[in-house]
Image 1 (tube, one colour):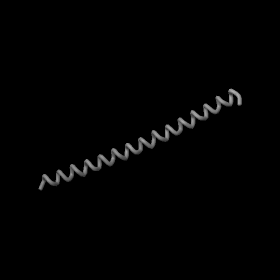
Image 2: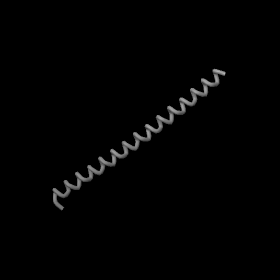
Image 3: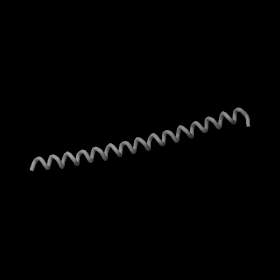
Image 4: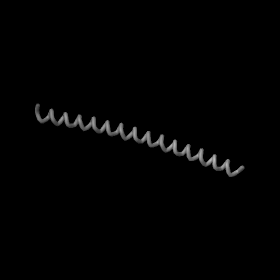
Length: 56
C-alpha cells in the first residue's frame, strides 16, 4: 500500500467522521427543539391552570 492509498483512506475516513458528526449534531438539535417545545407547552398549561384558579 502506497502513500497515496493511505492518504485516500485517511481522507475517506475524515469524510465519514464528518458525516457522522453532522448527523449527530442534527439529531441533538432535533431533540433539543422537541424538549424546548415540550417545556413551552407544559409552562403554558401551568400558567393557564393558575390563571383559571385565581379567576374563580
